[in-house]
Length: 552
Ligand code: J2J
Image (cartoon, rainbow, N blue to C red; front, side, top):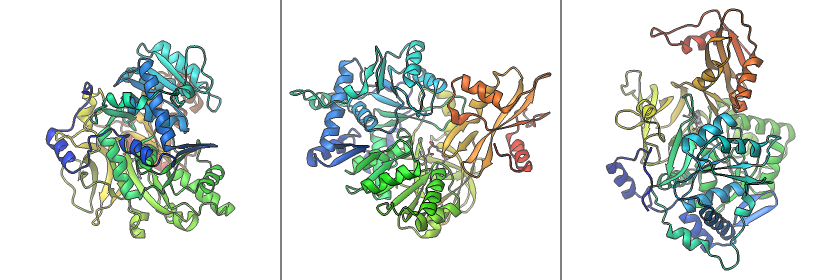
């Protein structure tokens, strides 16, 4: 069947032909190798979640049953579903079932609240939301019901846990097919196009609202397979998911999809808390795991303090999302006993990784190089001119798994892509003589809080709702634990006093995810402005540096 292309930007035909010829795009659904594995090794363990162990054949049967049930409920190919689930086996079965049925998951994060979820549902015209009943005392089902009432396209709620009146029970959807029912053939007859969107990922977002990143079956499968090569995933791999599974890194870099494509085992865990994570690693013989630098710090501190000795199976610790400082990088092998693999990736596509056999200076001091020979990178200065090797500048890229445009965002696309279609990452990097990249900073309006990306503009727009705020600007304040936190500079209107808590309260009441709330407030008399009258964030960052430590 021909996939819907409205709102999407395709690869130019000559590039697409080249990617097919090179074998990057296999013109099969992303799920095909996983289903073949289920035929060949039906009893091999695919998923572990607490006491639940699910083999390949059972996982695929459950996913097919789910896909068929979605169809019966009226879900069609290209329908979008906002997914907000904790790291559970049901998440995996749900996503696989959607892929088989051509239904497109929109990958929300567990921390998202009304502000984000409502926007995602509206922008994607989602027909359903999938949420847990409650999680960490938050009533996700109640919020999802409110969003269904507010967003016309949303018809169904699917709930993990106690589904209330009118909601669909996710566990029932995940049940194996009834005796005599064979959903696989019917789903295969749908012939999901390999060029169709497989999933929508969320951009780190430098704009007021996050952008949706369409990832096709062809490109996303290749993303995971190319990463598999460099990360050494194979049938023996036991991959632990502790970062939110809907994020690109644990989902497909190589992540849980890479592990399943390689015939390995995926262990789902809801938190990276060290004592529990270490117990899981020991219990299941985990070989590979992905983490952000803040978690690495906690794991190293824990192991140094407790000498648990529970990590002997761990071969590779992948670290990415924000810059890992060299001192911490150097302690991974001695303390945790695993090979460090730095990953500089992005939901938009391009993945850079250090090799497992690289010399120490590369593993510790760089963020690696593109994983595919089809990736192209260039580094340009402020004038758009190429920077020679050894210099630094903004990274542009194109390749067989890098997007050509955000979904339904023509105006934004004109700014995020160079005239020749290359994606402008906004990251300032240095290209070393040996081909490895070092991330040196960024030229984008974004705060990176321990790997969680926050758009400055989004925070600012929300804070302008406060009657006392005259002008405001959100910038990153350096932080020893998280790398960065959100700092807001503000000028006030006559007669107003504002505390940090007022602004946090305003954002919380607006239903904004907690990680975006400002943690430092600086009130100033005058806002520094650029020549064209915009707030000069560079001057604010310099001012911040001059103020010394501003701990929240
Ligand atoms: C410095 N900055 C980094 C790194 C990402 C693997 C790993 C991470 C992401 C991710 C991902 C960095 N050092 N090692 O999708 O598959 C910053 C850059 C980048 C942005 C992308 C993956 N690794 N970053 O973090 O879409 O600024 O993806 O452009 O969330 O994170 O953010 P995101």
